[in-house]
Amino acid sequence: MQKTFLVTGGAGFIGTNLVLALLEQGHKVKVVDDLCAGNIERLPAEVDFYEQDIRDTSALVEICKGVDVIVHLAALPRVQFSIDEPVIVHDVNVNGTLSVLEAAKSAQVKRIVFAASSAAYGDQETLPLSTHLPVAPKSPYALHKYIGEEYMRLWSELFALETVSLRFFNVYGPHFDPEGPYALVIGRFLKLVKERQPLTVTGDGEQTRDFVHVSDVASAIIAASHSETVGKGEVLNVGSGIETSINTLAMMIGGTIEYVAARLEPKHTLADISETKALLGWEPKVQLAKGIADLKKEFGFN
Ligand SMILES: NC(=O)c1ccc[n+]([C@@H]2O[C@H](COP(=O)([O-])OP(=O)(O)OC[C@H]3O[C@@H](n4cnc5c(N)ncnc54)[C@H](O)[C@@H]3O)[C@@H](O)[C@H]2O)c1
Image (cartoon, rainbow, N blue to C red; front, side, top):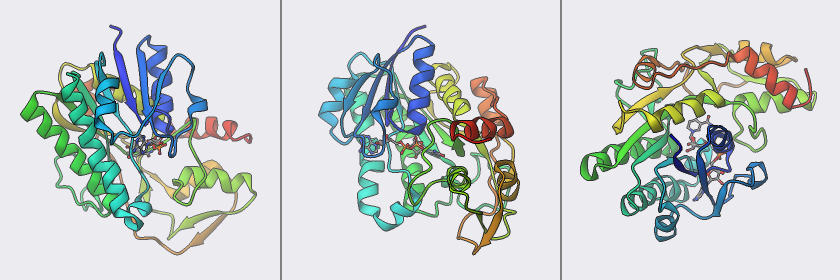
């Protein structure tokens, strides 16, 4: 059934991919983005675009009229920036999320799907990471994402607003931004190869990550926006369910490797996606080798 979606942060990396997938399925799409990081040129003309800060609740209430589902992606997602500028980032990530919830409540939007993060787990002893483990945020950003989940759960309980939070793992794919000091590892590697520089691997490179393709993230969001089995503040993992070491990733991308000092970061991440599969009937489809090969083409090399 055709629905009207509002995607906050819809001009960003995940947002752009999601918007294209929603339009392809025949849904109507509104986007709110203040363009502090997003790029409006990537959005097709049929999108109803509002250059707007999510913290302006009254403007959001107007935009939310007639909306069935909000996908709340807008955030300042850089971990180091959240450590350097915790007050600014808290305001967008926490107060901004509350503003979206309040607007949804006023405009009687049925459901919100919230972009949570695997960062909430911190460094855990037990793998795979299950949503039943206690959280251990290691940065303001991770804490903000966890607070967002709790706000979602609470607004479902208090106001019968349907909510579901999806903890994304390491997302990669088209429209990925490799620039900037906090670019994620795949983007950083691709940029280094293009510049004919060695790939800088931190520590021994045996740390592992769960890389999930953005098209699989988009399909999980869409499944969560329709599913009858969720809507009460559930928290679900969205990863590939496969661990890949940074050394393996560097080999897939190709080029020489230079080992540099280890960073303070979790040794391993791996999503337990059994509950997500069971509740949403969702399955990740894109294999890392294929996703990387496609990205290399997008970046203009093989
Ligand atoms: N990319 C990942 O690997 C990953 C992993 C876990 C969680 N997430 C979450 O997914 C969401 C989307 O991530 P992304 O990688 O697409 O990030 P992104 O930075 O590409 O997109 C975020 C968008 O939000 C917009 N925005 C920021 N502040 C805003 C404000 N005050 N008002 C309106 N718009 C604002 C930006 O302009 C940008 O277009 C974020 O909430 C992030 O925390 C991403």
